[in-house]
Image 1 (cartoon, one colour):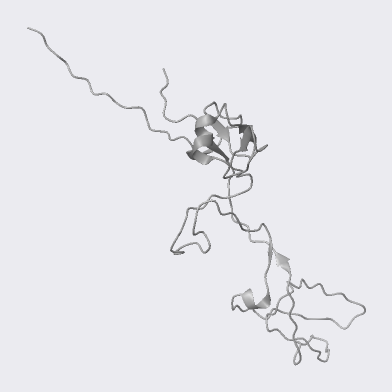
Image 2 (spheres, one colour):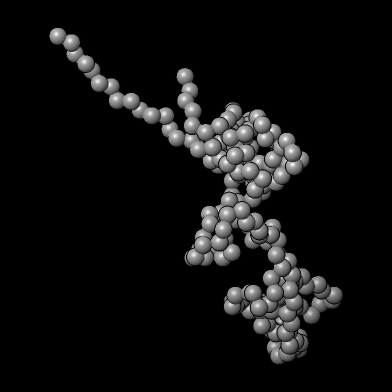
Length: 187
């Protein structure tokens, strides 16, 4: 009497040629992964990857090489053909954005600041420090009389301007890598 024992076969995980992942290692990843830094690589050695991405990220030398995607300092964003979450991300292979942007007065959201405090003594020369973010807060400037206990400013004018500033999004950085050899197994 023979007994046949069936064992489940677990297929290796599927890794697609051209798949892009984040990688947090200090050293470059082992092949078949390559860091997406815009490097030109061989069309022959990496024939399978070239067949998938072609010259979408650069033509290399136009004959024997092509470029990897370059994600240095960039953030990948998925296609949003309906522009539900991201405007202008309507097709693959687009790039854009800026690391800095100058806001105009029209682009500033409505907001208010408290009036703050200012009091001056009447004894000698004095200095006031003021940081001007260079955009309109609808504030006023003016003059008032000084007494022993100090006075607040009243009446008068306002100004506005525009200035470059930075929005910082807290991040951690990682390499972005691409798979160049399709599905495979390890012993």
